[in-house]
Amino acid sequence: MNNPPTRTARSRSLLLAASTLALLAPLTACGGSGTGAGDGKTLRLWHYEQQDGALSKAWDASIAEFKKTHPDVKVVFERKTFDQVQQNAGMILNSDKAPDVMEYNKGNATTGLLAEQGLLTDLTPFVKEHGWDTAISERASVTARYDAKGEMGGDKWYGVPNYGEFVLTYYNDDLFEKHGIAKPTDFKTFEAALAKFKAAGITPLANAGNDHPAGHWLYLLALSRATDAWVDDYQLYKGKVDFHGPEMTYAVNKYQEWLDKGYFEKKDVGLKGSDMTEQFVSQKRPIMVGGNWWFGGLSTDIKNFSWSTAPYPGSEKTLGSGGNHWVIPTRAKNKKLAEDFIAITMSDKIQKLIGQEGSVPLAAKADTVTDPKAKGLISAFDTYQADNGLAFYPDWPVTGYYDTWLASTQNLMNGSEPDTVLDELEAPYDSFVATRS
Image (cartoon, rainbow, N blue to C red; front, side, top):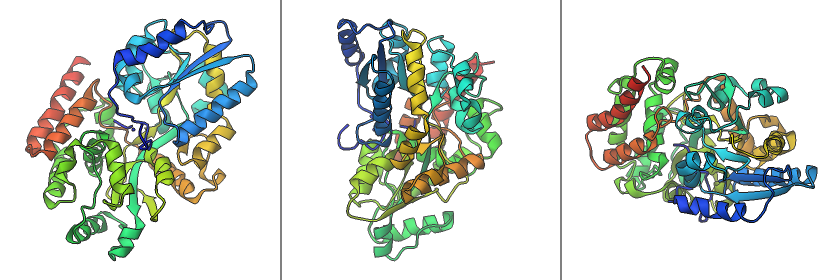
């Protein structure tokens, strides 16, 4: 539930509808053009980053470096949308159309599911050869490692993450100054700022009900009341989760309270994530809580006001993890070339570029980056890592759970009772957990 083409290339999510035919058409063309797949002379690569984003720039640089070090190899690159890959990966990877290396979403319902089905290559020897098993922190690598059931946190690496991601707060500093409102330092002052903006006739919080942001908000509010044990119970099935317990009950009630007070707009129920960022960029909303994947696009798009980022002040935990990762399909024809490409993405040169462009490199520290905004972003992520503050994403535990979270948060925004919303979230989760017994 973490992850956006239009000039809104501010995210990885690209939640555009994509058909299976749209995904297969270019593949058929490639297969029929005699690219020489399997001869060690062709690398077929997919990713879904948009061209002006930090990661797309890093992968462009990685491709250029690969071509330099492999002058006799042809790189066949196809840019997909997030939804194209999300919806059709299992079918494509189980065919002779599988690429050699591709960016893929992490989590039990995605990488874990394909690993369990035998569709992904076990990269553990490759990872250990390069020392990434120790260079990447335990918390950031959880989503790259899976067990025989396809559950994250196992001992086999099926992906190599290059970057970290987390949810934080974006502030329009000029609007805070214009209205004489102090930047929040804790939850009390955060809610005070919301009230003051509303009193000035401004809806304070950007939101998007028809995309991941609304569900992110709900989970973030639950995390503000959660312990490490609750997160492990929910994400890793280590114990029973009470959806009507204090964590989720607080979340739905606070969400409803903010809707009633006008801190969120109920009409935002139909918006996409790109609409949410446009609310912030156009200065219609002074506060946006969202992923660091928006950072690079905002840096490009915002020209006429000062803005800043900070950890969300209402919780010591946030949504976050190691980022989406490179995987090598089991049916890839040129696995060694794929490994060589992945190694380039983890090189000092590319990792530093990821940081300079506004993302969070996993193999580079903040002091190697010169841009002050980017340096602050990396430092905040490192703090969450050190304090065990990365709590993953709400839809990860159950296959297809993203749609449940999307529908349930929309129902909450449309006036459903909080208890009803909790029941909607609980039913598929409990049903799935019961199948594991």
